[in-house]
Image 1 (cartoon, protein in one colour):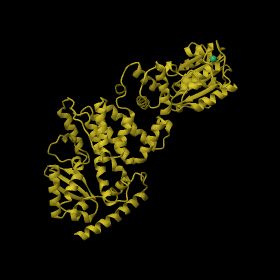
Image 2: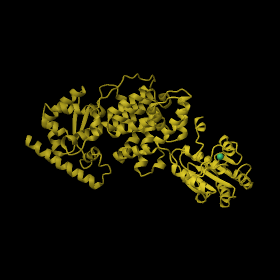
Image 3: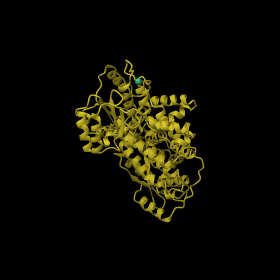
Image 4: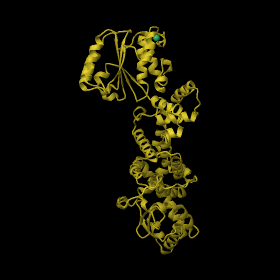
Length: 548
Ligand SMILES: [Zn+2]
């Protein structure tokens, strides 16, 4: 195992815990160390490795003046091989009862057999029972002079404060990306093989900051002979990238990434679960939860933070809902990419229409959010997975879709004659452009409208936000143009119905969405946006009024 083979044997080999090491070495060099230590931190952050080095230094026969164990004397050798009688590692998960701790208390009293100090490393100490904690506390209150305890845990808050307060506490963090890559590179060099730096980066990203996971993955790559994509498939980086495309309303980017993942043989269902985890982390970060509790690398934490600033709480909730809806669909979908493609389209399409209106009529509002949507989409032909769909499943899907007009009825996605909101959204730009030659003013009026829903019988409901616009558009000659052009674009017979939307909320949110700097809009900010919008609308109003 690489993890044990390349376990650091001296403090200087320990990467990513510099501050802790410095403090420990200083106290060892001065001979002023404590009798109980409390090491907390996520899995694979170096707690037990540091505990063993501490045990080594305490028993080293030739301790350096800087507190570094020599790694050569008989004690160091025995500890390295794991057969030093006075260093005991206890897994609290399997020795959690009162009898285990009573037994320990009896043994603690005995003099050390081999070395200067008896060192008890209790791993996952939070697993102890209440009675066992009480027994341990008695020992910690009056520890024999020749005994040192190191309590390690991934869940410090589950350990009673009475225990923690008796210990010197050290908080371990997940290592940074650079540190981990450096660590893996050392192993690669010693194994005398070649692994691309980029692949090391992917391993580090997939292991989410844990040394042990990263080293195990590297071992599978080098010794197991797996390729990097066999090993990782879709990684956390991809899920972060996908979420970023969603936030940027970059539908093309989403589709391309889905296609890449599909081509590489990654499980899209597992990938969707990764995305849920990523969104959850964004939710935690935006709620002010710190780096330690989000349990990720520093670099990834920064990326999550940047994304959280661009995402409104309501949009975050919508995305989480959409993913949770999409997950059970993977088992039923005739095309494995479809649940994710549908999710991206459902989220992005309605949002990327409203800002068009803002962009056209409000040139002052930055529109960098939309710059990516013009990217070309490439989709390779994909064969449907052969999975017969029972009639019952379709019925279930139909009945659930019927209740929510915003929801896209995806059982009708196979190019039949039905008009769906998704279809209208997709063709909206083309529709607007084809209206222009018929009537410029009408095209301008439509800029402040958006498709709201599709009803039975090919009726498309358009939402307008100003009474004046609504009245103008509803004039028979205009309706005639619109229905003719929309039928032409959708290649289906359509009827258009125009309704007045709620302008106090809808357009203002679009402004806030386009302007990524206005992320935490207070009600006052929103009110200002509404007023700005109304002002601009009055300008359009006047212009159009003159035209008619
Ligand atoms: Zn030594």
